Length: 346
Image (cartoon, rainbow, N blue to C red; front, side, top):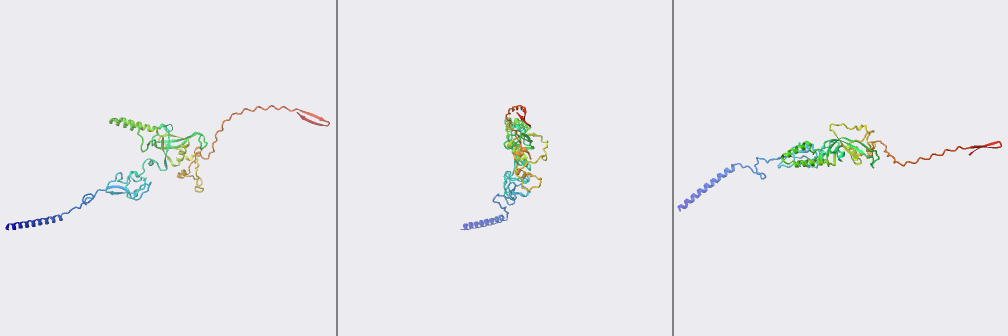
């Protein structure tokens, strides 16, 4: 019985000791600061999540609008946006191809690029058909300047004109020739030779030679050329290509001489302005002039010119008429009857 009491006392003392230890451990844990853990990243609140700078639209942007500083802004997004812009410098002055909503990231595909950016204000890019004989033997390259000559054989059904050749457009820039353009020009001779040398070192000279051959073949097979033409000359070029033959004469880029339009009478337009809309002697200009249009007969014969008369067909010569027989002189006789006399011719 005494042994039982002793064991019970020991157990009571052990329980009290365990309870006191648990109480002290709880106080220490409560006094220790615990950093909260975020659900998304699992990092502490003292370490903010990284962000990425992305250029977005600051307001609604219409298609075909030129971007200015107020149209775009930089937003800090929690994730990186592939193929987006991180600075606004590369976007200022670019033109959109589609409408954009506010806070939408901008991408290269939403901005105008290509040959349109090579056309200067007041010009249009016009494609014309070409052949080797009329394009300097296919020695024309994108970026060259050419003179466009216009030839008529005088047999056009559109108007009665004489056979003629004249300069239609002077110092016209070539934007594209065949598949090559000013943005994707063909390799020069030096570049091709360098490529062949590098390919020979790597053992791929056959591929380089084949590509050079393909580029040369593409130039020989070129069927069109794209020219940068002033707006007021687009209708002249279009009519000339339809009813005549164009020739591209390659010229030196430093030769800047051009004809003086003031020396020639302005060609009449198809549409006439409303009476009183223009001052006396004033002519239509720019877009209005192009909208009014041009007739081929005026392009071929010029302003204030009379219709050209074709030569009459050669007819068979008539036999000369036989000379008239010489007249036989008349004879006269006088007849007397009494005191009267009468002259009779026979």
